[in-house]
Image (cartoon, rainbow, N blue to C red; front, side, top):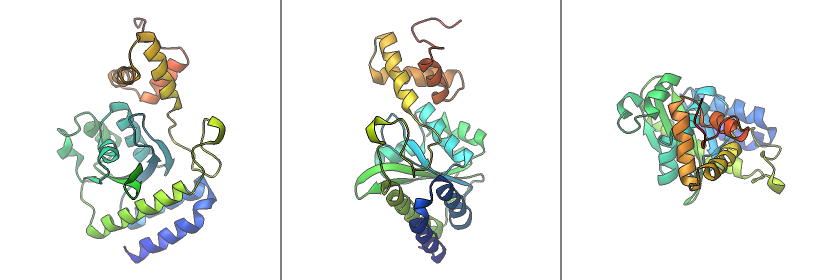
Length: 237
């Protein structure tokens, strides 16, 4: 680990109680100066229902996570499943691997995406995504620093109170405000399951398919379902 990253991690340890603004600022400074990337975000959760994004607010990185949640494919999903980093240094070469995600990610302005597991020992708790606007691999030193950062972010996030108390809809004070919260997706999935008489797994597939066909974010379609502006058991007008 580089001396600069050691200083950043010490700052993260001291400043993790500063709240969302401090964490977001530190994330941006870290990737720009240390890892040599253009954006970062980290989220907790490893299942098909997606993750709660809790650290870093750069729009392209969070947009990449939203794309993966909507499309059901991408490097973060592979990292969550396998527990090992996925280093995509040029998305143009991954069109076969991620036929839906790769071109959509490049449309957002990303050309390289590096995803690292957040874990304690063998227990996976989430992922950290770093992106670049130009293709190219991480240097060995940047890779080492990114791995160290992922470990530090894991400890910083898990040191806070989670899950929210008493079934609250949002994380507790002191957490970075999630960019995307998945509660409406869960609600919409349940509603579609009842409307169509299918399993929750199939209902989520139907929801994703509708979002993909309409070129909309999954969260936006889910909001329409929850608000009863959209039903899946009625023909669209």
